[in-house]
Length: 615
Image 1 (cartoon, rainbow, N blue to C red):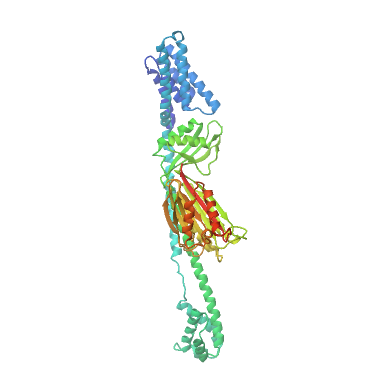
Image 2: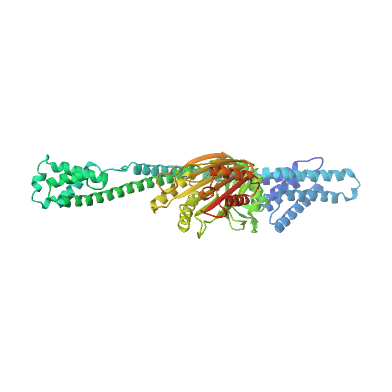
């Protein structure tokens, strides 16, 4: 028999014993305790039997008739309310019981209604009953549910450390593989002596072996042909062709000098091609090493992402279950997790107690009351909860909310814009703005920037850190290996809990932060993504405040202002714009820019603006 059953037996015993408690000739604990236990949905028939049995043992017959009628009225009213509304709130049950006690008391003293003392006693007793129901109901629910919550959380907690250890061991394995790939042969820009010797042997094997003078030229180690061939190979390595002096020396010793030079050029070109492929293979190994490191990082992040605090927050969880019970929600499993940033995440499986549909918004209200902080549904949570059990997640609400707007212009005579952008709201409370400018314009540039943004979106949604996502995207572009496939990346990561904003720039134009009439510029001097497998990411951070705007622009906005300092000019433009609408802000920036270009659009232009405000 589990602890819940033992506690219910204790409740039945209390239903008998509360009949012994008397206040000035009244027994308010009887209807109050009955209502509290009745709304907890323990065996209601047994509860009624034990309550009547206790009254029969300890109180007078007249009082027994009064309180029996009172608890029967309370039971009927609560049942009717549950049938009509599919739930019964505690204050409704308290009001119904208190009103029932007062009305029955007044009906019993109908002949003495002029006795004001009787009226006041009935009023005070009804208020005392209602107050006890309101105060004691949450405590009773906690008493019945807290041990069950602890048991479930403890059971779940046994597997959590094991999972974390597995993920961490997997991460170490991937790190080991990454180090193996990284420690392989390094890049080679020149040929080693062994390779020079093999090229010489290949040339002599094809030309000299069929020559009658071969034994004379190569029989002794002091033969001048060794030195001539050495000079020939080095000449080809440095200049790609044989020097005139080397050709004259070779002609002096060999009648087939032209054939040897021609064969040497072919052998050297083949060796140079092999060297190029060898370096490319090493480069790909480096990219694979980066990807293995990224996989190790995400595994370690997953192991540390959540800490199960259900065992230490049992009171909060029982309070949540109580608030949801009032709204007709039956919670079967509930866990509370703490993220790396200290914010709480609630995960539960629940269903409607009566089979009706309950909105997730209403459930979030109940959870917020129980948690004593604002909780909002997770990103992919359904909007309604029915009789079928469903898995729900709720996150601690952010301090700020973010709105964004974008304004774009396509280059004159171009079909599509080569700029792409994205705005992502991640589960951890981050709002990520990303802007990419593909090299050139038109369809090819559009494909490049779209691929960059799409890869970043996928990596971030999967759970990769921002820098890791950028490096993975760059690796994918390098591996694809299309010539001239380069794109800039401009990313702003806004933490909506704290207002801190991290900026990541790879070959991107200047970013602006607008705070009223003050504007700050954030510039960088890095190369675009897709050129080298080792990418340089320029990172900076700023603390944003209520009403601040972050403005990201592409090169086309600044490059054609035709002024000595384009960043300073755009800063002055932003200072003069007065609006609280990020869409209008972006639109007005482009309108001012067109005044400098005489209405022409010489390159793709994109302005992405986002503002944050306290909730």
